Image (tube, rainbow over all chains, first blue to last red; front, side, top):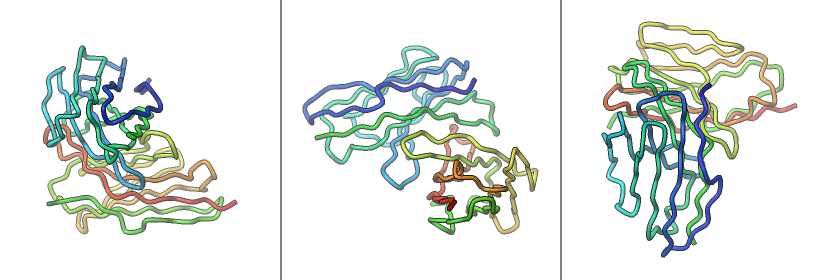
Amino acid sequence: DTEVTQTPKHLVMGMTNKKSLKCEQHMGHRAMYWYKQKAKKPPELMFVYSYEKLSINESVPSRFSPECPNSSLLNLHLHALQPEDSALYLCASSQRTGVTDTQYFGPGTRLTVL
Amino acid sequence: GESVGLHLPTLSVQEGDNSIINCAYSNSASDYFIWYKQESGKGPQFIIDIRSNMDKRQGQRVTVLLNKTVKHLSLQIAATQPGDSAVYFCAENNNAGNMLTFGGGTRLMVKP
């Protein structure tokens, strides 16, 4: 089973709203990731959690706040977003096996900021 | 900085033909490469991977070739089907904090 689930599938929010994206995996993976993907572009890494601790923050604005409640769950809290933040937000997970660590992606949340 | 890139943004092939998608990488220290397939409205799906100590790896209808001399990676799809239509990304794992570097992507269009 290589399934990563994400909710919601679609989200429309105003610039003053607060919302959260959720990600879940039950593969026993110890690393989880958030990516942002704009149309016709490759995914861009935002955050990496390794063993439930934030290990990488790719200079992401503070209006994006990640949270890892446990080894299976990853959240992305959104506040005061801008229209240019509209994108597909992808969650991924991996086993942390070193060189051959493979990331498995969820279906994404399509976010539109009005 | 170093990056992984692709030669062709769009590839159009006839159903039943073989497809070849190419990728150039610049980090000679890269040790692991992955090909992902991304269909419209979906997340990237793992297809096949290869370590730098190999030059070829085969899966079901797919083959990945690695040429470390010229830092080139390719994905070959045999007997291409309409369901193969998608954007294909190569990615490099630099093993530094579990970061993947993606190429720009190639759109494969299969004509019936």
